[in-house]
Length: 254
Image (tube, rainbow, N blue to C red):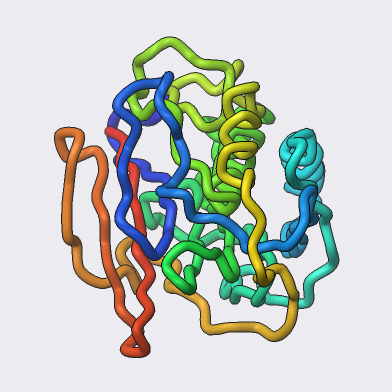
């Protein structure tokens, strides 16, 4: 379980306002944000910037999300530096490093264009915590990796109450991830809803590295614009001056 003497957070970054689900039966799409594509199923590449300690968990996550009927994920080699975890247009870069006592276990960010289309994403998992006895378990590693990649597909959490009974999905917050290591049927159903329509263009087209986001707690997040759930969630906005912005959604845990 989470250490009572620490505040650990998991971060989701996106460039649109967030609406959390009213209950576990509600939709858990992040406002319909999605990768633009002209056909289903499509393949989203996950750039492998992780060490051997994480390879099996990235492979499990990729296999799990590929069970969706509308998308597949494939792991590809990446030459990026894990600590910087700079994004690549058209895919998701996945990284691990000892980012320090930042207060977060995992960070996922997505960049949006045209109001709804994801153009690139990053996932970072923090070895400063995963190298400790508390979090150095298969359950915690699968849970965090699965959830952060799920966010980059456009999924919200199904439930954000850490003490509720487990829903059997990595998109459910929990103090005990033993049964929350993989997606469940509701996650796959939601992906089917998100990607039910096709687009005239595609944003899935790997090209060049883009400017990355900060890794420290609050670094590069901009200003806090809202807080909710008794202080357990916060939203930060950072504008780039070119008509686009990154909104970072923070889940805090006591």
